[in-house]
Amino acid sequence: MGLPIRSCIACRKRENQIDLLRVVRSGGRVLPDPTKQMNGRGAWLHPHCVEMAINRRAFERALKSEEILDISEVLKFVEGSSN
Ligand SMILES: [Zn+2]
Image (cartoon, rainbow, N blue to C red; front, top):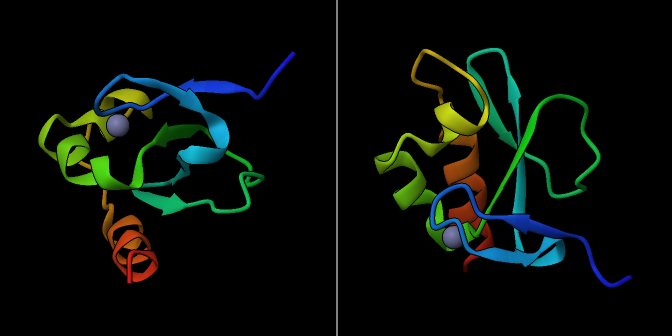
């Protein structure tokens, strides 16, 4: 038993799901999913790993996109919740 474990798509560290932010792909955009219940292909990462994920194109890899995804909503969410 225990909490569900997921790997951060940026740093690859395994982490309890509750400590990671879930994001989902919606077309060409990536949206934050704080409820962890949105439909669609999801990925998990530490909120502080967003920049690393961008640099490594981890969103595109994890969400199976051949095009660069728009992650502005995720950035807004992370910046807003860190204050
Ligand atoms: Zn991480």
